[in-house]
Length: 138
Image 1: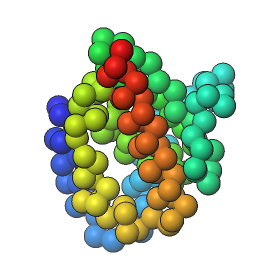
Image 2: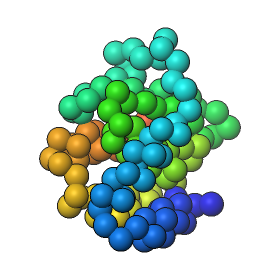
Image 3: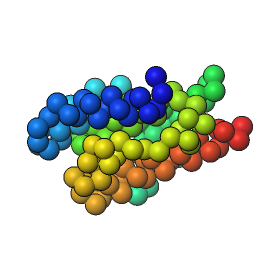
Image 4: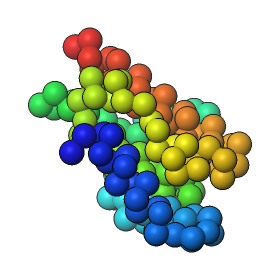
């Protein structure tokens, strides 16, 4: 499945909810389903700056794809991480770099997140893009 298709499926999932309280709860529930994140990966190198809460993203590059693992100490941010994992985990650098994150506007996240949460989301997206740039050159 392409990133574009994954974004469309995510938008369709959110269309089932009538109001933003239900959407926030769904985001939080997605965050609770994130895989366990090993304590030894909570390093300064993996920490994302620009987030109000603590966020760590670990990555590996195998078979031409970037494999991501991430966690936050905040429930809503963990949910945002889960959304990013649905879109970007185990993708090629080229696919990440050539597909715009349209799901942000399509879901309304750009309008419904607080400025600090939005900054954190964009910091996570920036890190994923930076990884894609590094690995596309490799």
